[in-house]
Length: 631
Image (tube, rainbow, N blue to C red):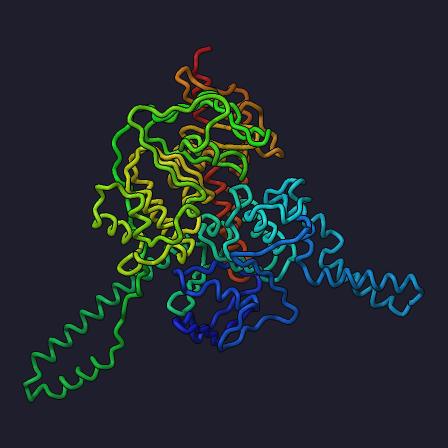
């Protein structure tokens, strides 16, 4: 058991928490949530031992090993990626160095060190020292590294890849407690899914901070809410936490209403009989009772972003057309020959690993990149707005928030509307005069989105709009995009956003682009897992794409025999997953570490079952149509 007793942390202008106490079980998987500024990262740093509390004690079992990944890590030097990952375990490095020294002494005939050498070697083996490089390469591969990047110098990698190295270095140390502050930052969807599976099988405790709702749902079995200097523990994943929080809020509202009704009745009695001598004793008794009542109060509500995209002018049916588009950089083809017709009302997610060409496709649509071959044309009445992945870098740090908005506002735009937009994005009163250069990443992201709303557009291109946004701001963005009446093409690694928004999926892989029109994310994922998993004996021909005479991509009709084989395989997996869900449900209803682990795995199993069931139903319908189609 990890115990925090009476923890306090004060800063000159703010107290983060005072007399905070908390317990974390040794095999628990928990998410740490709360409003910005609540002290989540500070509490994690205290647990990691890199920040001292002003008061209180942190207690852990003797010899307990803690691994900590902060939000920002500086990794430099000429060491390779795999070498850097291997260097993360200080104990292993020390043991290896001692083994080398002892081996030299043994070679010199100093047999007295033989017992110590055996002890060191045994400890080295227990910690996985002899498999250290294999483990490092395996983890790096899971995080998207090919052999070239594994062997490349860290100094030659971009910031995003360096953060992946830092994450890998933390994971391979195999600590008893993993502290992960925003671990999915800089990860693409395949890497996030790999990390999710890794953490589910991890034998130690995990405490993480994340703004990725799907990731938390898939990993954690409990949530610690840090708010107002207090820590409240909830059982279940993030969705369960939200549901329980809503239930408690409704219960509190009802309790407040009952209390107010009781107070009103008591006050009415006091006012009515105050002047009657025969009721004096009863009146005084009620006055004293009223004074002793501890008034219930609603929890302070956090300010949240609220906005809608302005209603755009209706475009033509065909919004844009790709015709044999190609694009290369430094001799390497990024966008392979590609045809596609974008139709009005589509909400398309571009999905794939980093570096495969998603942003390049979006830049071609935005007109900031010219293709090497082929053409891209917009349709009648199309107006385009583009939010780039590096949107924050183009903000002038010397501008105030208000001046930044005014610099992109049409001349006819009123101060009232500009101030109203800024208020919707939580820039209110004197905050509009803050310099852009002092804003946090989340504040800059909100400002960049506010600037995007100044001019209505019926084709919206968004490249990683959720970066730096907290969970409430992401929810607000999802709500706005759901209501948006134009055409949307977007890139994000937040699966929850994709699940809620995307009506169509384009999968961009190195060397290929696959179209999944009229596919929600769940259906796409079921098809992807069946097609792209090399270990699965899936018949060829599923999910290919071609172009109709209009140029719009369509899914080819598969051979009935192939569909039947695929249907049989999926049906078998559905039955297996149903048994797994049943087993995990029974185990999770108990108590102890096994129940908590089962609870963490249950949401993932249910999601897989839902995906496979949807795929089973789709294949059944497709088989029926294929059989009925005249030959």
